[in-house]
Length: 135
Image (cartoon, rainbow, N blue to C red):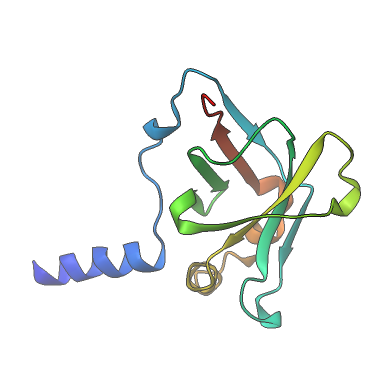
């Protein structure tokens, strides 16, 4: 019985997936965007598995956020590293801003050890889902 607890504890520590998406329900709508680019180069050091998303200027990420990588899992904002970029890389035009969403390093390595590198590399597998705040 105790080994089951440790197995679940270690799995949640290494791969803290979101199993309940009800926190996304909101009165202001739920939005989902695909990345403009995905980078998966963990051999370059920490924080080298990420996607860059283009969000409309009027949308702010102060609200619940969920990153989904098909075939790998769903991760709440608390388990991610989100960074608003001051510049607009990869041709992101006016009216939009760039957000870089990193998978945490230990999570990225756990995914790689499971043999899922190909799924991390494919931008079509990534999506960022969020709701708008009321302010």
